[in-house]
Image (cartoon, rainbow, N blue to C red; front, side, top):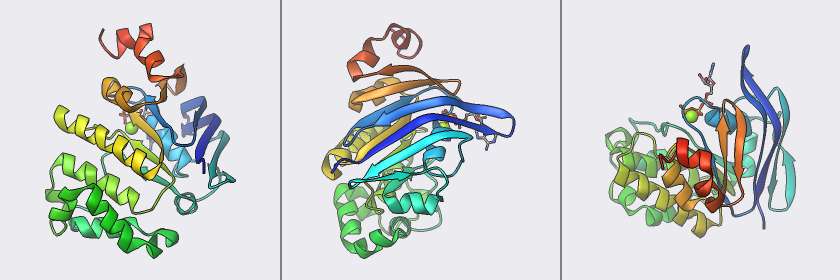
Amino acid sequence: MANSLTVENVDAAYGAVRVLEGVSLRVGGGETVVLLGTNGNGKSTLMKCVMGIVRPRSGRITAEIDGATHELVGRTTEQIVDLGIALVPEGRRLFPRLTVEENLLLGAFRPKARATLKSNLAFCFECFPRLAERRRQLAGSMSGGEQQMLALGRALMLDPRIILIDEPSVGLAPILVSRTIDKIKELKDRFQLTVLMAEQNFPQALRIADRGYVIVHGQIAFEGRSSDELNNNELIRKFYLGL
Ligand SMILES: Nc1ncnc2c1ncn2[C@@H]1O[C@H](COP(=O)(O)OP(=O)(O)OP(=O)(O)O)[C@@H](O)[C@H]1O
Ligand SMILES: [Mg+2]
């Protein structure tokens, strides 16, 4: 069943500062769509709007999940998570003084996910053998790459249909960035997830993207209908890929 996300004409602001202006984008069922942009251009704000953490000033956000359409604006974050939409937040936001396993178990707070907690945990450990090996280690003492895997694993504990991943590459060494990106692709294929990923590492993001958007000063500056279109765009090559 197709699970998709549609953002239409969203405006958002922090007080008097407008951060998103007329943003529209779509993530179709089973697609990996990237939201590309450098620091401070509104990527996280858009993800927070989808998750009900920031309330848009105007515009619509709808999700189609297992055949039903839901309007997201006005719902609480818990309600949105409960529909099957999970966020892997920027900076991971783990509980550093809890163990790997405790962090994963806390991920499964969605009532529907609680029923399948044991099998989801086993599945997480199968997807991330390193987390199984380190299940009793404190999350805060894991390496950056391991913490990113844990943040992804925690989101999977919600048994989501749509997953938003905010800058998975941040703070990771280049080899770990490419491993993390590969893992996201693997998880997406395996769980048949619909993925919206924010990144400023354009080359890495474009490796797994089906399509994407470039956000500049809170506006969609360019829409690439394929990863080739993004890779071959003159401005992207010049300003973001350094080619
Ligand atoms: N809580 C807040 N209060 C006021 N301004 C904010 C708040 N959060 C973000 N902003 C501002 O909104 C703008 C967009 O921020 P946002 O975090 O969405 O960007 P981003 O594209 O995710 O950047 P980065 O790549 O650095 O994470 C920035 O100018 C930022 O300073
Ligand atoms: Mg951000």
